[in-house]
Image 1 (cartoon, rainbow, N blue to C red):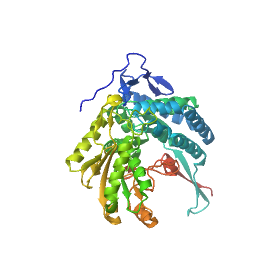
Image 2 (image 1 turned 30 degrees about the horizontal axis):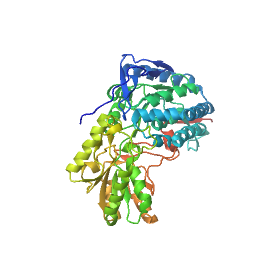
Image 3 (image 1 turned 60 degrees about the horizontal axis):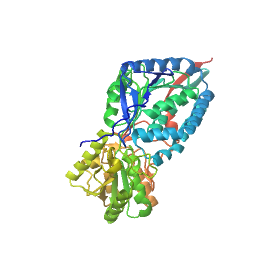
Image 4 (image 1 turned 135 degrees about the vertical axis):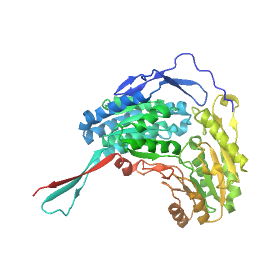
Length: 494
């Protein structure tokens, strides 16, 4: 597929540099890379391309901070910084939102709607600062023995974030690091690095000591690989594909790093015949199409009970056709572009594969190239009917606005189809029968199951996957605990 890009402006394009040890610096190699608006092809910025040598400097800075001034901050002082950071994010939210919109194509209404989540995450982790504690424990040693545990920060964390939600993904990695007293080297996705760099600046403005958070944009094969394998990194937190997740597991073996992985999904959204159709059609539809389908837990497998299969497919197809596709900056836009040419080729290729396997596109299926869309990476919201669970479009993560509609006859069959995938990140159930809802929630092997809603995330509720969708949890108490070591102290008193 040949892509046409708008010409880049000849002047006025900013250069964004790395943040290492509290300073804005060029990459040691002097290399830069471009980041462009996926809706227009316009050049947004030239970004310093961090590599392995820059990662070395950043890890060294993070280690100095961890062992130096940051280690002396009290829980109250860490909380103060997080709360100040939240205030700065709130004050600059429109700028951060616009950066997400321009850098990765998110519809502006979708990006603005994440304000509560972004601020809620920061303030949740601020609250956690003063709740971290050990325990006193009974023991059976002879004599007088006092036993207790301490909770201590893991150390230097290497964080690698995806491009599909730069603001909230970055905050999700920062929160537990700062709450527990760890330090961080952050490698944002090269496809959308600008928001992470701005957040790094706001953290310094909030009073974070130099070196606590370092931001090193670059490419996965260089900066990302170096960070994952670095012997000075104590933990890696990664969100992205299962393919890259496996590489990170291999890279972690050198010094037995802790690893948290939030990987891909092929989530089932199960629609029973007794569902509230007026609720389920838009709910399941946006479970697929929100953020242009670029959500890891998107409910892209629509499992529909056979008595309503034809009606539901037609209704959700009509809903897909009604969605406005356009540049994210337009408040009327509901579906923006996919992030880049590679992703466009991937999504279009999967649609072709599905049609070749016998599926039928009852909505969408094509790239949009007319008028204002001609320079961007736009593809129609697509519904494929006549899908069976053995097809590639039902088994492999597409990461675009493509739904695969699969019929089922019984609850047991729906559960079996739901679980017949390598992934287990999310799942949905639409029914007015409470017993059915509970049975399916228990039967679906995934980290989250939504009932009569889809995709909502709360700072206090753990999120993560089963199987190839990764391990570890983000949000909630489980998330903070993953950044802490437990030390037992056994003290003989008499």
